[in-house]
Length: 266
Image (cartoon, rainbow, N blue to C red):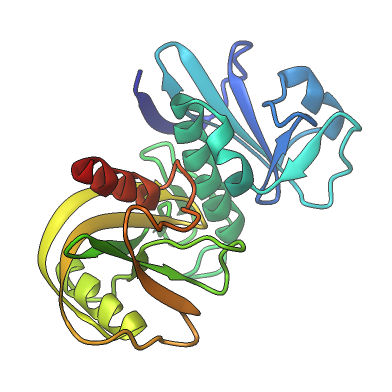
């Protein structure tokens, strides 16, 4: 089953799966299940209501309420990242798209060119300004993520923003006018002070926190000692497959890349 994205005002299909958000927080039941439509009835009309894609005949509908909305007792609001690993892949893909669209819709109420209100464009998956004709498309921010090996070792690092004990791969955003390969080399050099070589493309992943588009590379150590960029990295170490620390979310491209490296060594 493959998720097919689109973006149209909600058709209010009875069989649509509603992905409800209050601000940028996902609404679930207390056991983290996705609520059925009856759970949302007391919330009133949402700020936004769009059908955003489907898997086979199942439509997913994004509903966004104001963050000050009073929730019924049977709903809770949670950070999507904390529950991504609890859903099947088709639901994860729909939630990832929903979360990115939430940020886009809430951040683009008014035209950035002339200040007038933005409305849905019937011509394409965008918002448009009737006053000046400007279009606003969902934002994507390309970022490179790099798995660096040195013989039988892998380089993992900790950001001050990570949950306790978690180590992950080095990553950073592509600068204007920069290639993905140049970004990968620059970010590794800036964050830990080492040089890399033999870049090999792995794959991509949309990561909606808030709108990253991750581009994965494998690379090999080419020289230098680890020197941390303190505002970005609080620790970085070489690990073997026997000494790996706590790894990132299994749904993340970082985890997938590490798993691929592990499987190639077994």
